[in-house]
Length: 396
Ligand SMILES: *Cc1c(COP(=O)(O)O)cnc(C)c1O
Image (tube, rainbow, N blue to C red):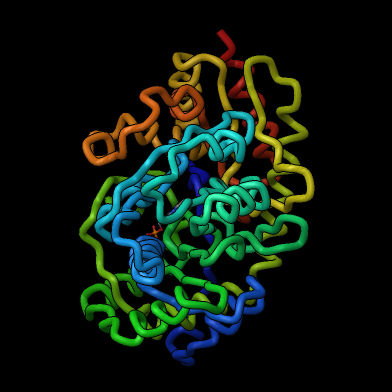
């Protein structure tokens, strides 16, 4: 029995070998080229990136009363966890199910009196309305952190996702556009935030030995077993954890190891190839599922090119969603219900969030109805047809 992993990067033996042979720092250079921003640093994770960007923003703002960060009410739990780690509080802004992102008009109506920064989400590699969000931030005098953890290589009007606002981040974790098991990067425009980041990064510790060796071994296993024929053998291992996130504020904030940096550099070099496989699979899934009753596809905004780290869709009825996920599982297709709750319903967030709206209908609807499908290069050509068959059999 084969099983198509929910997400993943086809890392080759040569990618791994290059990590061992050429410990390098080319990742920053490649990220400067992709983002068009002059500052880029690799770091131990996307969470570490978010934490130190927010700390640098706080210092640069010089206004200690500004201790809130506006986040989309439906995003990865690592976002509010990083905000807590930076000593700040999340303020939730509801999102629009049709785009999975922040509506600038809704953002504009938030209470900005204590807000330091706004965070985008670009979930599944689909760009948010970043130009709109950026102009609201300018108008309100707050900073924008463009969270491109899932959107390396995505673009809006030919501008890189991650490059909007003051600073952006990318993640190299397991389910992201490229993977070194753990890892991330920061990009930033010149100015006071970049200066603070420069000095914060200069004093970061090296990543721990156990962490380093562990990640290298896991990456070796991942590179072999991500193939559908082998994936069933490692699915049960806890570290695969593809498609799961937990709220955790304890994580290392360290430099990315030389090995991971070198592998990341290699994979960034293969970005076009990896992206075109995902785009092709997303286009084929769109064509196969267009007009399917009770299934709502998410369209990339006009002018944007998505990274399609997964293929999201909304199912009209929560019971059907549960049955669908189970049916995909039986059919060997790694579908996930993504983040199971809106942030307002995650106890650790609920207890810390700034008082604001009490209702987040958009975020709650997404949490109840989203399904994500795999798009990676190991997806077989008949995936769209198989997906459609499962969806049709699960209609009532
Ligand atoms: C994964 C993710 C992060 C955190 O990145 P890690 O490398 O896993 O720490 C932040 N934001 C979003 C939207 C993510 O998907």
